[in-house]
Image (cartoon, rainbow, N blue to C red; front, side):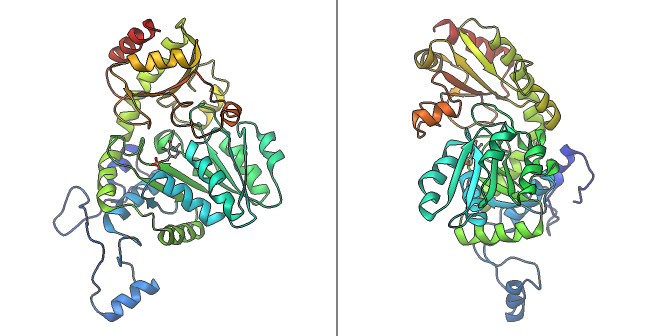
Length: 393
Ligand SMILES: *Cc1c(COP(=O)(O)O)cnc(C)c1O
């Protein structure tokens, strides 16, 4: 269905869906690795691009394509490139835009493995990187070198919930011929559309909000232009980190309720963040919807809501955080985020444990920092759960 100009919820349900011969309401799972050509000329025309169609699932597949079209429309991009995981999307972007001797600037508290793979692997191929506080435009400007190719932002960042001004970053990057990539996983297309603010490429771990049900891992890249789309698709095909048709089907199913899920979870997150801020055992709370958040105004300007992710620092550091996490009964003690179930985790010992302590502290990930991903359970149950666990600290 053509959904250009339609509302967000209509797009969630119908963008990318196509009529098949049986009138299926949902996009079927085309669990086929290869597609037969009608004749030799048809095969040749598909390979040369003269005709559109399917050749081989690593290159393209109808179920995966439906998801790519859906997310591309939600992000207002040229097209989507679905990947096996969020890290597949990240590495495709690195491989596509960076070469031996190139330099990348990124958010210091970016998703741990996005930084780890750059510093531990891409560095071996001569790629240079600087990790800075991208919420401060001056530090980005100071990090720009003649060989800087990429500015890779995560906003809000993980797990410090710090925002970077996408519009200002886009202007600065473009003045220096730098490509701006935004990891939009923490917001989802429902809360923020980086391409509309000037970014060149947006990517997601669809494992999180877009799928939303903690049952698959996946990623997607959505560039603004055909030129970037062609380059990125070719890179993904070469790297071989394509999504699988069954994965794509699950994500198409999950994405339909994206707005409903976030609206519900966000209401609860606002309530919990306010409640935590007043709790005597909590040192501070970081949530963009709190007036105390240093970038509350930026959040209101560049996002359509405040999201469902809360970080807070326990008084009493690691030990207090451990007691809290060992005593919650409704929230699951697990990494990941953006699902229907509430999750709690401790970045210093879990998601960001691969980062040396000095770098971790520089990135703002303190010892007692707890990350809370609000799900869609009843708010009262979640607050009572936190209350009884905090009482034990
Ligand atoms: C989870 C996550 C990733 C990586 O995605 P995977 O699907 O786990 O590979 C990248 N960026 C952010 C912000 C994430 O939360």
